[in-house]
Image (tube, rainbow, N blue to C red; front, side, top):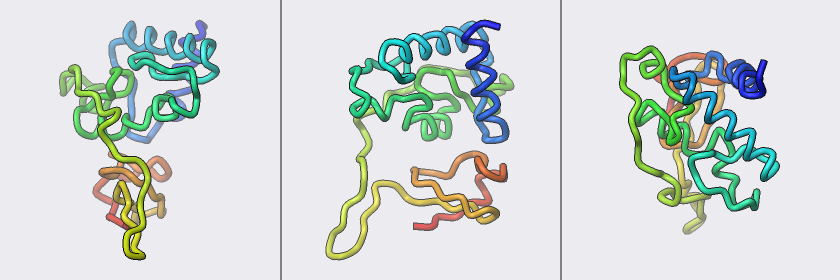
Length: 157
């Protein structure tokens, strides 16, 4: 088994039941996984191969796979920026996989306190089944803990 195939198997185990799938184009997927491994050797971390990493882990934290933008990209477009991760419809061929716009640099980071109240950069969603919390623009398509669909989430904060 090649290094890419070993990484693919490991990541598939982590994604199982969480609403994420690999791109069904196996050549594309294996090429991206190979480049993640190259970046891991080069920088010490798996920076997204479709973006320019600086080599400074602190500056590149948002680019470490899975990147900070994956969830919103998959929710909005059915695929992440590099096309490694897709939703179930894209994986099953019910939706085409296309190029999508870059999100990096377009989102605020962190929260601020104004007049004693906390203003968050992202809403917090709570799974009503298991209590899982996530701070992002919308809930995941499936809860990564218990696997229920996004309809079982509520906005918590």
